[in-house]
Length: 99
Image (cartoon, rainbow, N blue to C red; front, side, top):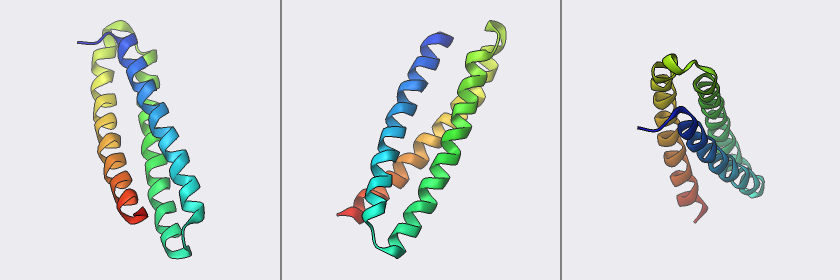
């Protein structure tokens, strides 16, 4: 099992990757036609909201006492998996439409 510090570092790296992909996605959306652009923007906003929730859980995990961090990490892990699943689904849809 990862230590709290390893877990937080792992989550930070994944968030950086998602933020990078979201930035690229937002650039591509600016080039899209009006109808597709609106749809992409809704998806991006939903992902940003989930990302913000994941960041909140990350901060709770980082700030928790050593004894409490395992309990807090359970909620963070659930938010993390939800974000991962949503991001992969939305990114896959975006890539299909982009082609």
